[in-house]
Image 1 (cartoon, helix red, strand yellow):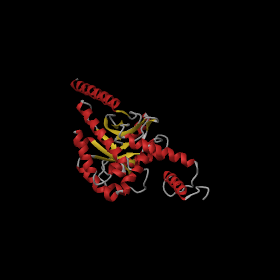
Image 2 (cartoon, one colour):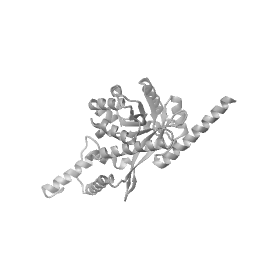
Image 3 (cartoon, helix red, strand yellow):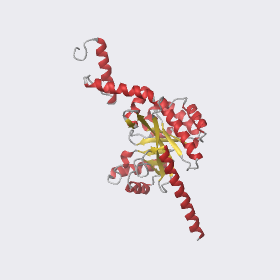
Image 4 (cartoon, helix red, strand yellow):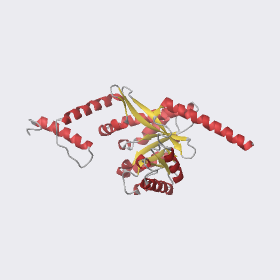
Length: 313
């Protein structure tokens, strides 16, 4: 006072603006108010208001990226990734709006919409005779509540989809910060037949003791370890260790961020079970993913005929 405001209301408003700026920087930080923050705060408020209307206006869409079996390259799952078709800003990636949705609670209805859409789409692919695969949906910490099993059950029933064709993916931070309540919820989901994965494995915690508390099926190696795996011995050693740990715990291991043939070859040599990345496909809309699945069905049938012919010869 008086530089940051000449009355109480203005001071409180500017303090609130500085607080949100500090939150954006992560924990244990502070920010002093500056006039430039007003523009940022206005942009944030505008985006939040648009986000609240986006579901009603059907501006969200789901893109799918395949997860393939390491040896054969056959798709075994598809990760469902939300996109926002903003009327003015164009196609927005999750990194541009999910943090805001987490903060204001909109991630819950958005997350449920993604799950509902992905399950219905998967059932549609199956009805069309495409390869039966699992759809994998990311789960927010805000969704990890006692009512989640009921929500998932209703979505599966409405879609007519068997539970084994749905997977849920949680980050390490969600698992570690919700051990007490999360354990029972995940055990209930696992009992329903769902596939459970931990995402971004190895990036957040030095102790992996939390793994024994949860009924997991898969570990996903974060792309930061895969990116330089062929040139950095440390990254190669880390991926080798994660794969060994996963297998020792009876879990499958998926490598994210596989972009080159060299990545694929080394991960195969290390014993990685499944892979995901631009080498196989970028995230694409449902119609393009259906075409991808159809092409794999043709390859599988052709391969089967060739194998039978070779056996007869």
